[in-house]
Length: 291
Length: 290
Image 1 (tube, one colour):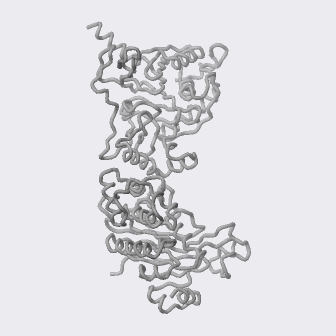
Image 2: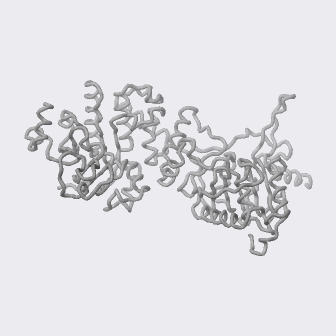
Image 3: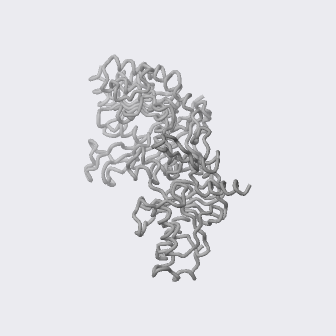
């Protein structure tokens, strides 16, 4: 049976600047990501893709290609200039009385929903791991508190249960549970990143967005973090979007991959295919320089 | 409560109830909006008054805007009718309106209060007006006004809950005493003004109209009659009120009223008295009659 996608992205475009007919036009094509007419920066241009249940989708591209902009739009951190996003979940997604999408969000473009609805969706269905722990964590609040905050967002109100889950997740992410009530500013970078992952998955999101999770970590910690993500994927059956410029990460984690350049999708397909037999010139350069 | 006929009939050369009619009208409109959206803070143009901001100008402006000639007013400060703040406000309102003043909770149609709710439950014919120093309950976790407004709009209250969680982790209990944040109508988190925890449950499904006003911060909000008001609490860390450990009021012997603790430094002893002066006095009178 072919599953329905949980997330459909359609023609997502983000222009930083005024924008003009040239850069807003769907068919326009120009070199680079600066509009020749109005000099606006094109962050993302006509990005469309589907994310299926339990799938891990990779987004790869050089820095400045619009990967993080895209993820931040999907996470509703920033608003796209135009474009649509649809969500669909069937069945129960967790054991704490999950009741599905709010009525206003069913079959509707999430980007044009009211901020109240957006907040609800963000809190209940998405998890996000940022590149830097400063963005994803409150470094002055205890590690346990950071994880609990995520569960509080999803309306959990039982401290014992939440602390039990937080310590379970800290165990999973190999952070000593004794340090649960210590603020993450006392932690190393790798530990902070793992607290962030524990936080993002604490309310069992349907979609987990990972933005350059391993960048800046040393190789052994990288391996641990990647291992963790893979284990989690098997355990909690979450759909993931993995953004990275590291092809090793993409190869290890993802089933399908999108290659971005200058804010546009230039190639997409099965990860193996893209890595073994890249079609576009840019992808060929990328694959050759990495391997 | 005000009618057109009363307009010109001021006292001591001032318009009735000191404020000009346009100011009263604006404040009444704001009150109507506040009643329509329970717990939502409505901005208003706070007027200059002959007392300084921070000394009850919020409550005073509401009282002056809704008071009419047939009203009977009670003003309390921490439950007491005779403290300086209450006496000054009462004298001022008397001098600009001439309405009847009382200390009797049951007789009053309007009660202006600082930091207490009378022990005797108010009825549907009464309005209680709270003086509010800090209307924004989220200010403890977020300094920016723009940001707290966004948080209210989206009901994005996780940081408030996180604050309470951290409190429990550090202190073993929520350490907020007065000004305990409440959920109004299952929508907005609201600052109930610095009333003790003891008084929080009186706000829930109350028969009377509750009006709150901060003069310095220029905000009006309200809890209409029979509206749900719940203190923020966790399933395994329930909200609890002050515990007087079996102590009773030394004047009237009441064991179920909020008590003030005073320490006699010379003798080194503690004494407990009802905080609500009118309640205490009525208890005493009843006892004498028996």
